[in-house]
Length: 250
Image 1 (cartoon, one colour):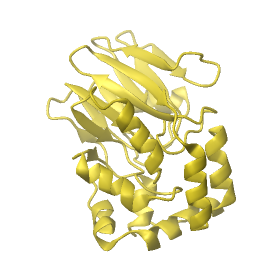
Image 2 (cartoon, one colour):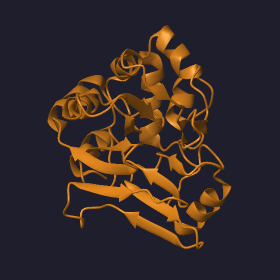
Image 3 (cartoon, rainbow, N blue to C red):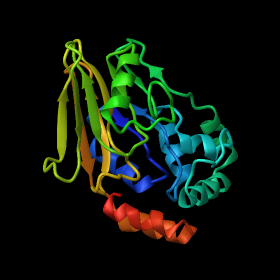
Image 4 (spheres, rainbow, N blue to C red):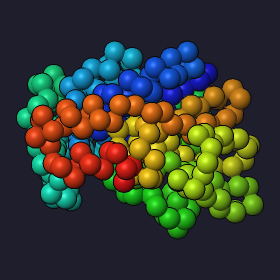
């Protein structure tokens, strides 16, 4: 079974479509670690894509605020402006879609892997460092956990000897993809990076391909028309900071 793993779409339809087009024949199922909306100009259209491809989706923090489950207390000014605009833009049915998204962890039927937005311990926790990753890996009850929230492609692994391995993929890595070969007895935390708003200084959309049978995860990137998205955001009156950051992947 081959899965397309995506997260942090953030209402960026052009980036999402570029991912789908690049991998059209390479997966059987779509799994999303949350933040379908927020920041970008096309919230209804991105939700429509998720429904059309029958994706398994868990909620992110922006999804919760957009549908009224949570408030903007922890959002900066730009994020708050964008999510309030998103809330007004969403159709009633898509508000309901977001409201009905499950919180992570979502565990696969074979108990081989799971989806969370931030962390196994707390759906809104950011996993940036080895200490937090170690705690999450110790709490894991399945071998592989896919997560998002940080917008940074990376992985953490805890092997059978108790050794923690971590790698962040950034602009110093020349390869366009990184293949993680999954070893028996090792637990993994894997972030595919953000489709809609990368923050690792690479503006291309980030995602992963997970081959359960071959026991591999490929972290991949694809280019999309960033200027077209920026123009849409300008027309919608979204914050200039959010518009400009797309081009630099920050």
